[in-house]
Length: 508
Ligand SMILES: Cc1cc2nc3c(=O)[nH]c(=O)nc-3n(C[C@H](O)[C@H](O)[C@H](O)COP(=O)(O)OP(=O)(O)OC[C@H]3O[C@@H](n4cnc5c(N)ncnc54)[C@H](O)[C@@H]3O)c2cc1C
Image (cartoon, rainbow, N blue to C red; front, side, top):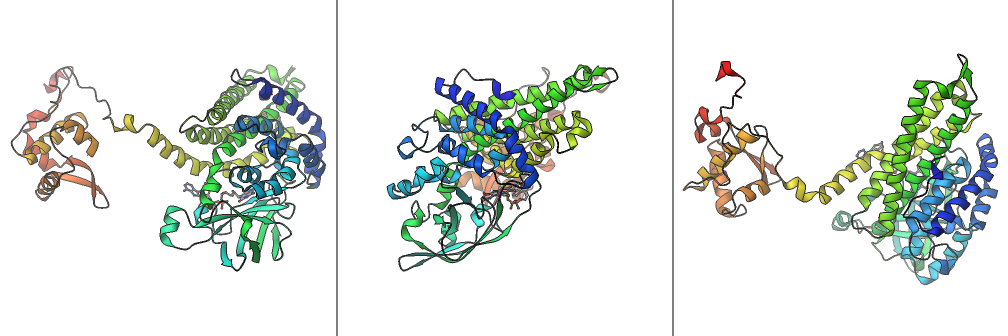
């Protein structure tokens, strides 16, 4: 239902694509819901997706894809949202492998793989996760060792979508153990491994709690020989290949979650209009309206956020990884909450597998973990926010002084540097009694003092040795200062710090 709204900034082609792919989704619904009864991989749907060109969403037109070189994030998101409405088909839908080949491949690699991937006749898979390395993808242990004519690949990958079905696996492997390379993330390389490579075995298939129509399992690379031209990008490029398409993937996954949520809300709403209890259809009840209204509001706003993030990526806006990550996090959580509401509003019917809502909710659980786990994304969003808002964060927080308190002076005056620092810290204590001063604060407030000089460090050491200041350090670097109680007493008498508001007349 949410998919019906289009956005002003969409091009006519994007609008037309949304109409077309959603009509296709409507037509495939029943076939794909049937797949969930049988653990069936919907191969006919995969073939149809390929015939319609959807696998080519981010593949250049020159290689049989849909991409004219721009608008990839929006195009892919529109397709993913629509396919998100039909569980079976969308789970089988992945373009990660194609995206990386289109971006990093040699002409030969593009010619060899992209036309088949675009047409859906070649199925790609991406193999990052390992038994002992999940979110910490830099810690993978699968290793590619040089050998005459190429590399020997050894290791294991798990939870790989399309295990045993794919024609080509994009495998990330370490090619160096040098600690400096590991630190710089240049220890990984990417390889295109044909599925029929000798000594590449399927070790196990997982029985998943959702997305049962997904083939997902463990791959074992046991001295798999790879020719030199199997490498995607240069040696050591693995990390940048892996992370290169993450933002596009995140907005597309956000939109897929929204498609899933929209479908669950539509099912529930249709059901509520036809379910009579207490002499009324349930959609007339205020509580139910409030819950559905909340879910709808959340769905509409997070969808706008996600498509806006796609637009920012497509227009090359600087730093739009922040919006892309925020969209994925919020969409995954909002969609799960919305599907849960849809399920609960349908009573026992919601909990049965005779309507798609239970399945959608189970499938949505994947996206709390996949495409960057939500908790990992929270940390990433914080770090990206720290960068974007660096100037604002450098400002001291505003503290409101009562009119009776003299404003603190911009720059304390004293003959000695230790006195200057101590008085400034004491003055700042009046404003922010619980906070350290950071070095940028000190720089701003003491423009005539070189905070990075040896003299300044010496003055801080002196104050510390007298126990007048407490110093916060990261490693050996000073990152903050605050006065101790002894320091406050040494700086001023107690009247200086006294701050009793006018209205507390008994204490004046
Ligand atoms: C259905 C399905 C399909 C998948 N398909 C593929 C695929 O095709 N290819 C592929 O390579 N992988 C695939 N995966 C694996 C998926 O990418 C990983 O599950 C994901 O990267 C998380 O890794 P993990 O499961 O090992 O969890 P872990 O990394 O072990 O994390 C466990 C928990 O700890 C939390 N955590 C970890 N690190 C941090 C941190 N720094 N800060 C805060 N919290 C943290 C996580 O959020 C999580 O809640 C698939 C998984 C599933 C379930």
